[in-house]
Image: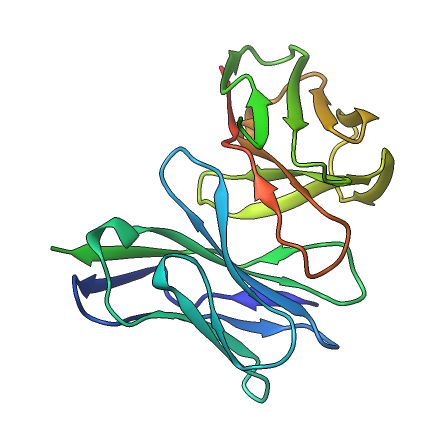
Length: 113
Length: 113
């Protein structure tokens, strides 16, 4: 079965430190990969996507993600976290043969002042 | 100038009632979606329409029926509401194409008494 795993329910970092939110997937073919962020009582907002090409993808608000095909991972990173980055982050994968977007279970990021 | 708007934002109703949630997008997208987010924040696709044609129909009770009068609107009607239907329902839209990000509304929080 096709799936997306976010192994950490929660990630805590201090403001100014780098952050990583992990995502691995089990999907056949060459899927499209996405990261979304959800703030309280809001819908999901698109952050970035990987289609093909450079393994380091840059997105909104200073976020970037590193694609690793051999490890089937797509980890979200930011060099210097802000308190305002505290939110729920979702990794999502769309198999190239499907219309469906498969979401991970979400990782809550807490950035301490 | 909200891109994807859902009404109502909150819906509190009794078990057994029938209710509808409306969604409209002004982005010119041709594909729209309904998702359910449960209390643990897990997101699951329910339906998707492309140019008024149903393209995703997940294993959802047939009490749930989507309707797309035109490609800018996708409504969700729910018959005989049950306690387990309590959740946040998100509408989203995108251009057709696997690499296109989805744009989400802010959700409708449905509470069944």
